[in-house]
Each structure stands twice: as C-alpha cells, then as structure tokens.
Image (cartoon, rainbow, N blue to C red; front, top):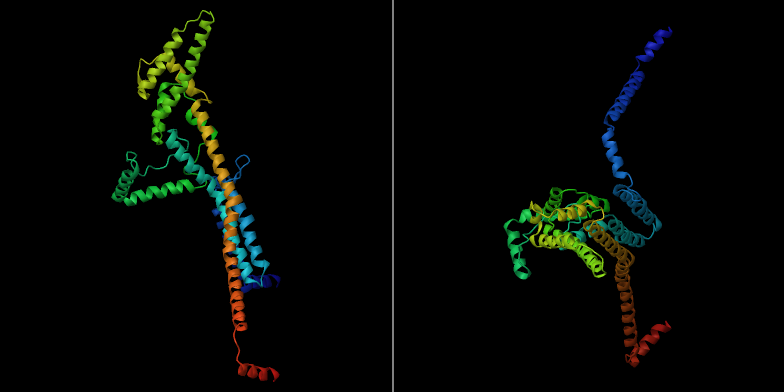
Length: 374
C-alpha cells in the first residue's frame, strides 16, 4: 500500500510540476556557469579596475564619481522639496550644470588639455613627447597666412571625407581618457631616448622620431650642441691648466671638438660615414646609453611643466570659472524676475500718481460720495 501511495504521489501533476521546475533551475545554473567569464576575461577586468600606484583606474574613478557623487545628489534633490517643483527643478539644473560638468572635466579634461599642449610643443621642439603623433591632416609645405589657409581649404575640398575622418580620429585621440595621444611618462621617456649602445641603434632612434612627425634634424642638433658644449668646456679647462704652467696636451681634445663641429654642419648623415671620428662615436654612444641624457631630461621637464599648467587651468576653472558661470546663470533667471516685480510696482505707482493728480469734477465728487455712503 505504501508503495502504491508513493507511486501515485510521484505520478501526480504536482510532483511532475516540481520535477520540471527543478530540471529548469538546474539547466539555467549550468548555462550560467558555462557563460561565466574565463580566466583571461577576468584578468582583463581586474586590469581595468586595478589602481596604478596611488591612482585609481579610469573605470574605478568614473564609477566612484558617478555612483558616489552625481546619482546621490540627483536622488537627494528630487526628494528634498516634493511640494515645490520649481525649487526641485532649479536644484536639478544646478547639479547638471555644476556637478556633471565637474565630473566630466575631472575625467576627461586634464588628459585632453595635456595631449593638445604636448602635441603642439612636440611640433615646436621637434622632439616627440607623446606615445603616438596626431595624424597629419594637411600638407606641411603649405604657405603661411592667407595663402596657407587657401591652400588648406583647397586640399580639404579635394578629399573632404578623408580629411573629416582624420580630424575625427585626432579628436578621439585627444579626449580618450586612457589611450590615444598620451604624454610620455618618465619611464617611457627613458625607454624611448636612452639605452642605445651602437651607431646603428642611434640612427633607428632618429628614424623613429621622423615616423612620429618629429624633426630629426632639430633633435640631432640638440644632441650635438650638448656634446660640443661639454667638449668646449673640456678644452677651456685644458687651456686654463696650460696657462697655469701645467704640461697638458690639448691636441686630442681640440681635434674631437673640431670633429663635432663638422658633424653638426653635416647633420645626421654624418653618422653613416664610415670614417666618422671614433671619439665622436664614443661620445654619441655614451650620450644615448645614459638614462639622464639631455633628451630624456628635456622630455621630463617639458611634460612636467605641461601637466602642471593643464592641472592649474583645470583647477582655476573649477575653483573660479565654474562658480562664476553658475552665479551668472542664477542671476539671469532671478534678477529678471525681480526686475519684472519692480516694473509692475513702478507701473502701479505711476497709475496711483496719475489718479491723485487728476482733477475731479464736482458732480463726480457727489456721485462717488453717494456711493461711499451707501
């Protein structure tokens, strides 16, 4: 009897429904497990949120700024004055104008301003200061002034789609918070402009400068000028020793100085000369092998100044510019209302004076007097 009861229970609709439900749940759990991120995907996720030193990653910072600043402010503003829609509307507008703008500036503006300034400084100095160059939209051989503008306009009209794509790509490279055109960090500058131990490797450095839209000739002149400056100081020191009565041989030092001056006149092609002075080669290799050479120090100094300037600009805007704009926005709204109030009052005042100054006829006095008595 017990077995028959169990069979009837097992074959009942309720038992079948429970069994189907359990099968469905197990199936969904198995599917979810199979869809769980693999190890590589999880590691990529961790990489995006992992802090770099004392700095949060962009994803973490954006999440904190939006989830911890903007959203709570909006929720609080919506609940603060439930019976005063105008006040709620004003506070929400202020949040959108001030807080959202602040978050966007903190997340995007510093990098964008730094990239723009660094890109332009790279053009001026000829020394690439960024991870990659901006795309060259127009021919660099264009003339200056109005003629140059006309040439660029003509060049744009010849292939507008291509030019717009280039401009769009440059804009994205500027505003992208984590990639695109990024100013070199100190360790990147060291890796890029030092650690080379042969003339062939040095020539590749100048080729790379050219590929990044830099000016190899300007950079080469900077390097040779630095070596000439040091060699001139060495020759001057030997001259001083000789004048002091010491027995010194200035010949070798003077010969190297002359060779460096000749190399400066010849330019980069001098490095391809098989008869290049061995002492000059040694000095060039010594220059590019050191982590504190003039190019590295220039990149560090320039990028430090640019970052400081961009940060100062951002701070000044957030501290003074944004509050001032917000004040003007509020004044424009409420002062206009105040002016309307004063205008209405002024009209009433004028109307009352006009009535007081009006001459009332005797029959009007009797009429109004009877009306008041009633």
